[in-house]
Image (tube, rainbow, N blue to C red; front, side, top):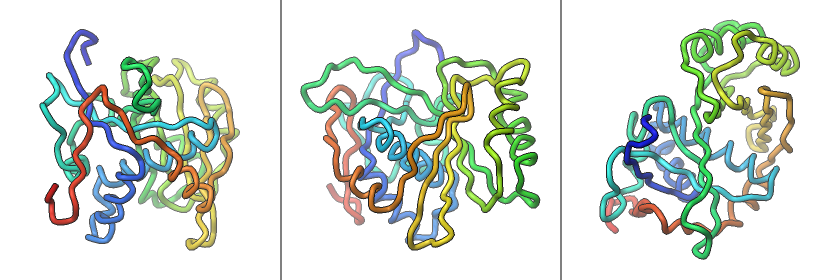
Length: 236
């Protein structure tokens, strides 16, 4: 995206996005690309918050000047909505209503590892090379979040070593891998690992901690249009 180009962002809090994701799942739309991406960024955000004791809002970029009011939350779940080139979403620090109007943003791109017939560490490396590393333009201000959406036995050490020794280096500032690691679906546990530019393990996130982190936030982001919350019938 041109650095001088005007853009705005629809901002939503994680709690609202989770609530609407549940509606999408109940309606049988959980496998749609944008619905899966929103689940990925919500889980990744909770993992970051649990590790750093910070809170973030999730932004969906649009070109041009901001509208006078936000749109319905359901719009965010449409495939292709509010994606600019290689940026799927942005993370914005939630500093509350009294925070500064200018805040550092984190640009994020997501990819799901799923429907692979022979899942393994080697296949995961080949998947990343094929989908993201060989043909992406270098961007030192873009995170890649890899969501392991299928069962896989993998070793993050050789994966990280491959990325760190790769020449040219990966075209991202950071690469993370996110996975649900519990064998009991009723007691999920999410693990998030930074695998580039160095190995870094974030604290695991279980369901109890996820609920605690989810409830502890400010919700307010007045400097860009907020997404208007609608009920299930679409009324304000």
